Length: 259
View 1 (cartoon, helix red, strand yellow):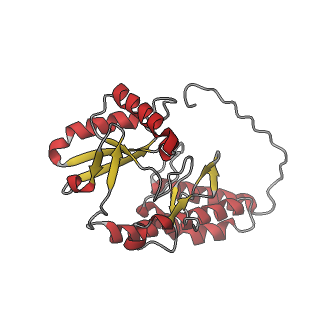
View 2: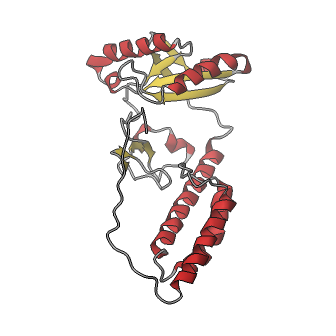
View 3: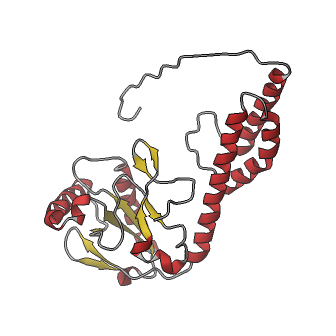
């Protein structure tokens, strides 16, 4: 796993019980139903990505009532309950995303000015009429963290699509760039990475004075501030507070935490 590090997982059975009555038949039928749903969703047994697309969510929702009825009173009742809860959360996520698309697509982006780590500024006025890819990442020489491979791809994209009005802009998220006495060190390590990766697209940084720049947490928009105007106010954004994986904070697949 990861960079060649080996992990050993030991599983110990602590208890077992025999299926009572017609439970064996119910479980067999339920397993067949779940495998049929898996096939309908076109998900392979080793699939690790948990996010479903809208078509998959609708297919799963259509089977939830029947699955719940079949699982009632069996050892898989809790499993089906968790499936229902996850599908419901993902359905909410997609609904929120579609609503945001209605609010933001085909709308003018707010004006901004970005400090560049190589000096000078980049204004939004110079990007008008282009498709702009904003890449938020720790542009730091050390430690060189994943997914630095994305940077190479973005450099390729920037060169390949330059004549197609596609512009790539990097935004360094280093914590040192948010501290006045460490900005120079932060820009220095970012410049070293730019030179090491031979990047030609501009890389700027936000000093964090208006919007939060979380480290190990997602940026979270307050659930009561989803309209286009509130979205532009830094006070309506905060750092994710709910732990979801190895100390990382955020609510993927669920409603945002209130700010």
